Amino acid sequence: METESRPGAALPRRFYGWEMGIVLALSLGRSAVYAVLQLAERLSIAPLADQTATVQRSRSRAEFFDFSYQVLDSLFALAPVALVLYLVFLHGGNPFRRWGLDFRRPGLDAVIGVGLFALIGLGTLAVYSAGRSLGITAQMVPADVTEYWWSAPVLLLASLRHSLVEEIIMVAYLFDRARRIWPVLTRRTELAQPGAAIWLLILASALLRGAYHLYQGFGPGIGNALMGVIFGWLYLRYRRVMPLVIAHFLLDAVAFLGFPLVLASFDLDGL
Image (cartoon, rainbow, N blue to C red; front, side):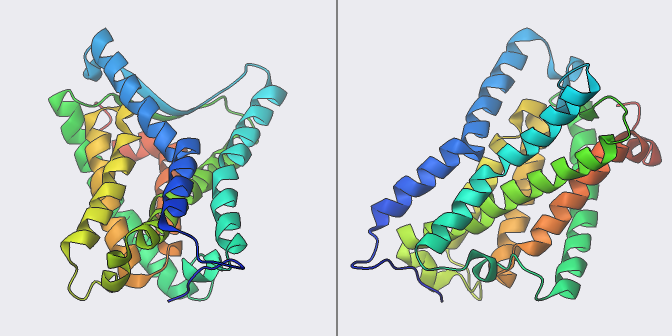
């Protein structure tokens, strides 16, 4: 297994702990805190079933400024991804090869990614339908943007941004740093006989993933937590994050560009 070092001395475990805490505070950890607060606010206003949750929305009525805001939002959101890649390079590692964020196995990555997309997509529809029926999920509006010639490309850029941020930070980086903070995980990540420590790592990542989706209601929080368990297990099984990025990109792209059509195809458009 590739190790990290710096001239002079090995990095102490607390260094990785502080680093991981800072990265999460700048990215998905912050999102989780805000999502929990937004859920509490929603519950204090009206039943979740009577509310809507929008993921991507227009930022301005003026076309130029709306375009500028949309693109800049995606580019700045990728800064934490650039940060974690830089931190790994800084201490002697190659995150692209270590995490499988490359094109060495395009066929396998595509097959796993598309399979995950189909599995998670159907599961998401089931969880969304159940959540709406039980009144614990807000009505989803994945994209509420003005129709311009650039709307579809910008939404695809947003899909790429979400897939890279979530899978690189929430899975590849978090699992990497956890192994350096708790060495017991390093000896048990082959998953031949996964122990309690491995499953605790997978569940912790999955619960955080579910937490930053709670602004949409309890249903999406539960659904994304289950998705996190599957993604975490597969990452430790194949040691490649690229299939997860592919699956997540496809999920968001379909949601942003054709969510009403998907609901209608499964007779769920009345939810």
